[in-house]
Image 1 (cartoon, rainbow, N blue to C red):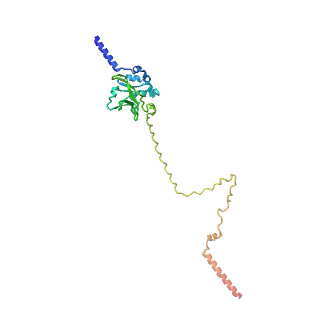
Image 2 (image 1 turned 45 degrees about the vertical axis):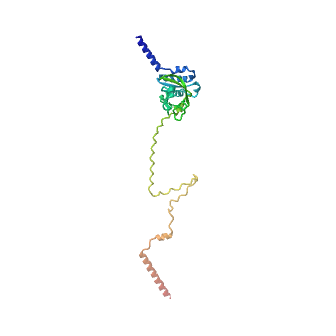
Image 3 (image 1 turned 90 degrees about the vertical axis):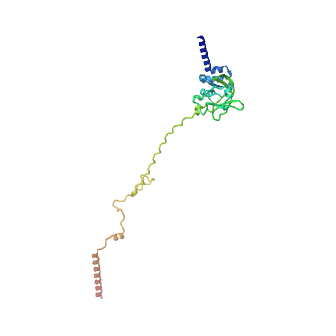
Length: 276
């Protein structure tokens, strides 16, 4: 019975030691990484690391941590990019099948990363050095693997690298995140152009209005004399016109005039003969 209990206890301790670790306690024994360790505590990334079963932490010494600064959120993003969601030690990195690989980080798992900001590029150089850098397009491999700090295969590996890895745009991620384009408001439909007013029909021209008095005419100037009421509306017609308009004499009147003229001639002739 005692033997059976001892075996169960040993198995429990073995399982516990294989799956449990504390990154803060591991780094506490290395004073050169106190700044890195403090940032893990301040951002509470240490709790997320300790929940994982398989993890690799890329630690940076105090004298190289100057580039890690900003608000707590910014520091958390940067530090999250130094936590790889897989186990890598020196031996595994030296045997990369393609000499270059993309590593997924804790920052990538947050869903806030953009344009591969949450991935690391690890490459084994021809010189044999292992270099790290951001997987963002155009980023350089700026951090070199220095040495192993601690390892608990195959759960946690802590490796020292020469410089922090800061992905382009990660510090002002909130400002540069693409906002959804504003909804395009429907443009008002062009109102129908007013119909051309029909040209007025030809009509008799109205009589011209009476001339208005000149603007500079004094208000108290006497009005022009109006024509007398009994004056003819138009000047009298010339005599010729009246004669032309007079009715022609009738035929009987003309006959009387002719007989009268003949009688007078006869009388004058007789008188002249008597006088002789």
